[in-house]
Length: 44
Image 1 (tube, rainbow, N blue to C red):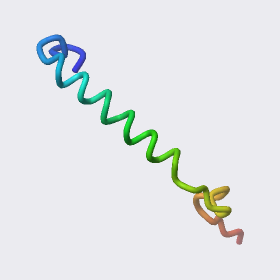
Image 2 (image 1 turned 180 degrees about the vertical axis):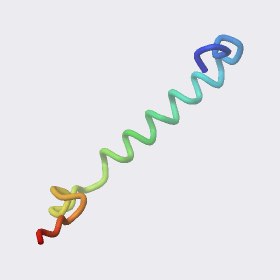
Image 3 (image 1 turned 90 degrees about the vertical axis):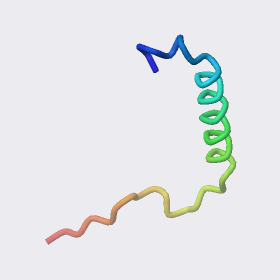
Image 4 (image 1 turned 30 degrees about the vertical axis):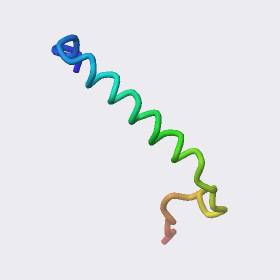
């Protein structure tokens, strides 16, 4: 969108709106207690 973004200002606005919607919905999800570790590591 950097090179040709000026040709499609409506798409840029729609992209910004959609990204904002996705961000807000992700922030609204409850955080589970097991989110401290993404992957369980095993020691040998």
